[in-house]
Length: 462
Image (cartoon, rainbow, N blue to C red; front, side, top):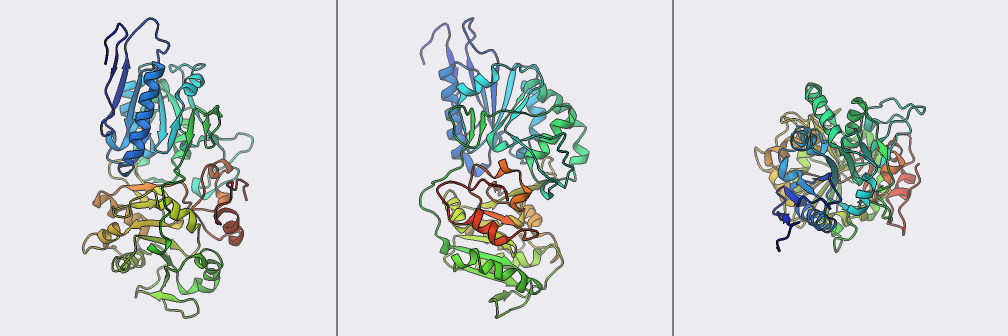
């Protein structure tokens, strides 16, 4: 590195420890406000986060911009950073009083820094600024606890897949508010970080400013782009995935014909695990009686059963009203290493922002476990249900925390129906799953959203 009056000091990205790029002070420097990038990732997404950090470092050097880069898996390793709340205190103490912009991005994000600087050029980090790609619920929905929707006063919240930007001044306000909110958060279920964090910011008196520079489709004007992997090599062999469907005798006639008429006809390595063996539908009983709720006993029996199977790489556990794109799933699994312990699905949390909390995969959208993790979970004494009706997905989250296995989140899995999501939330990637047959035509949901991939993604809301 050559010395000069405007010497550039770069501390390189190393194992995703905090990167600080400080551009030497100069009267000719164009940028006086720093960009603080927070890459919200997981431990098992290290290569993606590393590549993004390297790109940000390179762009910052070219543009002569002071930048700080954090990776949440390194800086906030205790979990819950995906809710954003655990980061507020530290970000405030380090950057709240400085002229800084907090730029939250995901592991599958591309940043065009020159465009981002242009967007921010009309703003002041000393002001209360909250920017992103705005989403808006059209009606009350289960994923947002049926919160009231007022068409006359629409509530916009950020599509965090496309990133979001908060001013240092806003971080300071939010950190103070969070200090008084932890008691309530101690017993909360975390479902949708976009909505829940957006609601928190609104409760602090700040509305989201939506901007077309936050994108899920690549266009010239984009500053931050959600870009999930579309080609990780050869798709996973569907015959190496064991599909386990949980059912019980009262649902056989109502739900199983729908599954046989949609995605089950595309695969052969599956079993329908019920409380009884029904020759009409080929169901299998593992000797666990049905329960009204929870189903922990049945799910763990499936896991122990799958641990003994030869030749499988993955276990996919679904409800009997889960609709699935086996093609989208196999393409997604190509991006993950089946020889390592992997837990994949739509991530929820219980008090996830606090030390006693944990993450879990919500079961309705489907839970995916690699074979090594299946064996770990099935090991004696590792994950034993307190009762057969303990909530299976939440209890598995506790087991994963004990095993120090992070939940790998994919927004392609859906716990609810297409109509339960704002239209913009279903843009930008091909869905893997939807859940519930209530008040929908499941055949239409399957054909419209989950059939083999057409040249362009379906975007029309049901």
